[in-house]
Length: 135
Image (cartoon, rainbow, N blue to C red; front, top):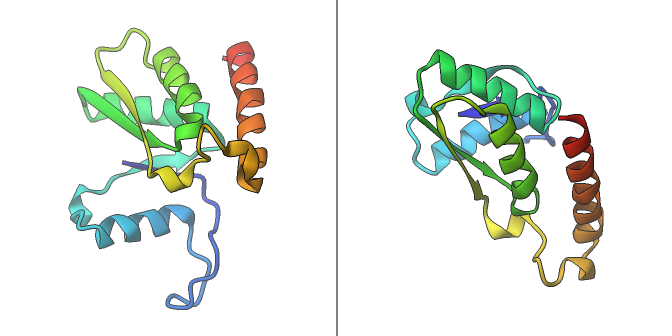
């Protein structure tokens, strides 16, 4: 299952356009050997992690799923799991979080040595505080 924020990605010379990020994700899954009929796109555009999880909950309920494993960047997995537990509270679904490939997240020990770490880690702490307050 994939969610979509309806945002265009970078230029694709092959397609001669800027495909949506979700379209790129579908292509990558197919490239990795996932059959196209096994790829589901959760209906509706999402704007943040909370919105994404609400859409996922509704999709899981409509399809009578028993478990959901969310793959996300390691640095945001704590907030994702916390949000999943809040949104799925009271459901009978088994939920879990698995970090994506390590190169998609700053290393926990050396994040402060890299520009991406300075952009993502402090912002993630702000998001954690905001999510605890808002949701």
